[in-house]
Amino acid sequence: MAGVPERIVCDYLVIGAGVAGLRAAISLAAHGKVLVLAKDTLHESASEYAQGGIAAALSDDDEVSLHEQDTLAAGDGLCDLEAVKTLVAEGPRVIEELLVWGAAFDREGGELVFGREGAHSRNRILHAHGDSTGREISRTLYRKAASLANVRFLSFAAVTDLLVEDGEVRGAVAFDERYRERHPIYAKAVLLATGGLGRVYKETTNPNVATGDGVSMSFRAGAVIRDIEFVQFHPTALHLENAPRFLLSEALRGEGAYLRNAAGERFTDELASRDVVSRAIVSEIGRTGSPHMFLDMTHFGPGVMEHHFPRIHQTCLRFGLDLTKSPAPVHPAAHYAMGGVHTDLNGLTTVPRLFAAGEVACTGVHGANRLASNSLLEGVVFGARAARAMLELTETAASGSPPRDEVFPAMTESHLRSITWDHCGITRDGAGLGKAADVLRSVPLERLEKPSRRDYELRSMRRVALLIAMAALERKESRGGHYRSDYPGKAPTAEHSTLVIG
Image: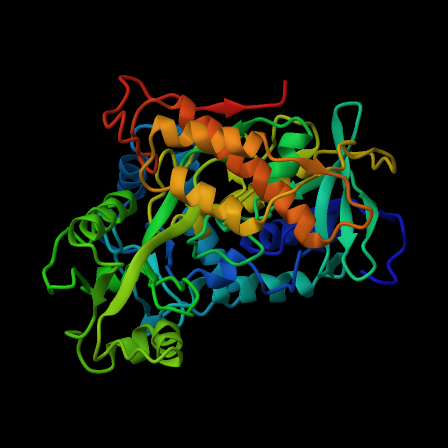
């Protein structure tokens, strides 16, 4: 942001350049100046890393009602029905829109190819280049947004706080890491499309930028945070020493990959929901003492890995693993947050002029557990809906202040991530959650003369980790992605959790 004026005024501020933010920017551009901020490069987002596909009821043997049923079943009784109906009903239309804008989904003989993933009752998953669907959708939306004169992009602009005046959000504060300076940006409406929070866990498939900033700054601004205890752990992250926790897509199991233990035995239903498979892997690790399990694709036909999963195949080859010849060592890793900033069906949070879409938001569409390949669809559908609602607002006020508590936790990131992984992870109990909450609450806070981006991110991570621990401690049941060994059964009724300052 070097050289950027100290005060920036635009009509619409979009924080995040993943699919939700880009889709919103496209709709907003015809009605005013749009500024899209990316914390890192424009290509560093969870959308870019999404190997799984995008789900929509478009095939001949599928129906919107079936997609609805599958989503509700995965959500384990906690989905908001109207949110689910909105997602699945608008899914086919947004896919057609992406096709018109040039999205190159996989085809055979000119016809779209529909795959199946865990907990889907029909083949309804579209992929692009086998395992690069998120990258293709992001490319399509970025190209469309960049072609619009009213859309401006600003990279390496980490947002640290929201600007609030008279109880309304009036903009945000962007951090210039090069000079360690903060710049206010004012807008008539702000959309949070900041993605996830997986970085708060020691094991995660998320990119480094996924530090929960959107949830943290919204909470500081007074927004309601809902269902934050529901974190989805992807069962099959690559578990090689000195390799990133690269996600091995659900589509591999949809294609017929087997999960085996060190003795070569299959031990679970590979197409069960992610929480079930993750717990099965952790249980088998505990039973056998092995550091990981194995995902076996060696029985696939010639060329399947190379042509259907080229990104996965090539990435594993770079780390000395040929998936056509050897099973992949895998371990569950934090992948997706079902909860987040509470919004209505139009992305509006509980704070006026603040909207949220994509993983940072909680519309209730995922309930307690997200159905595979609904996340990219959610970003596109609710990004567009939020934009339409933002257009109803008028008046850009170039004033507003961030919260005053400019203090930072005096702890290491590795310590924080270990606490969260050990006590707020796949299997939880009251004693561990209480310990995590106590430790996170008691972390000393310090004032820094020139904080870095990592300092701001650590502040976000500590706040988000504490919110997860607090909400999980209060939920005395097991449901979806939240499993408590001391409360293994479900409560008679499914209720949302809410957290808000005060």
